[in-house]
Length: 428
Ligand code: CTP
Image (cartoon, rainbow, N blue to C red):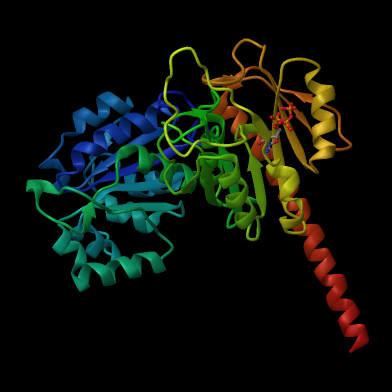
């Protein structure tokens, strides 16, 4: 995954109010303020009185390059809370203590943060952080339920070591990179992918030679992981089917790990029953050893094992029947010559709505790099060559096309439904 260092969608040019309340996790809010700023947001930090016991405004000011606030009545600016609330594209409270949650649930406006919260129409993300018993208390749980009713998004808490090492249950604040992802989803708002089921495959497969050896490829999974992260950010419910990869699972994304092409086939087939879109970014092996040895092949002087290969199933072709009507299917093609002509053939042969063609010989494209240069092919449309971009930006370019295809599919679907309903009425 890319670090939070590059300006990127949807943070670039957006305003985020970062509320910090009085818990020990306030130290992580410092990293979050920096990450939001580096991602391109203008961050207005609002500290409660409790937060001032843990962290200082100056720290945030140095990282965001903007004033940090704590008073509801700053001299000369009595309407600060209204201004902050109106200008915000999102409000993120991290950490949100039990006391803060209680005040917010009661609709209080007795400090700058709660007053801003009442006055804003922007999406709100609350990141609870407290001792696990305080979190489990019915009072806190009732407050959280009420806050969810207000339409606030609750992010976390996680299970993990709490202050003083105690606590087995949830209470620990999410990590800054996870909160950044939640802030991104809130900033993105409703998109055509919101609530849709998107299945993404990523990484290479491993085909066993014996119990310890395999044939694999150099795919890192980066492109697919970026697509999964971006689809979740756009509001989708995302399943990532991944071959072995060192990358961490993007926040919010459900992971299913597989190893072989055959396991990939099974996983994709069963996921298609629910999928509104399938993005097949995995580098699935085309061949596998015909007879994997049951035991480790021994080295014997003067002999070298001969490995006979057989074809694996083509996942996209073999699962065509399992696709839901109207679902959108995206494939990738890694080519070394005649990229676009070969791509057009795959687009048709595999029944795809979009094919992303990579020329492996292009500098900056292909495996194990953060950038990619791709050509997008769609049936009946001219080729669209994109410039060299980060894989995160390529993921967004692909999802922009998927957004449009999903919207068309749903409007066609609803038109069909209306025609069906009309026909049924006429019959009735
Ligand atoms: N693919 C698949 N099952 C396979 C191999 C590939 O579903 N066994 C998918 C890939 O995930 C990708 C698309 O098919 O989305 C194209 O993959 P690519 O390797 O470029 O194409 P192949 O059909 O394998 O053709 P070739 O290797 O001959 O170029």
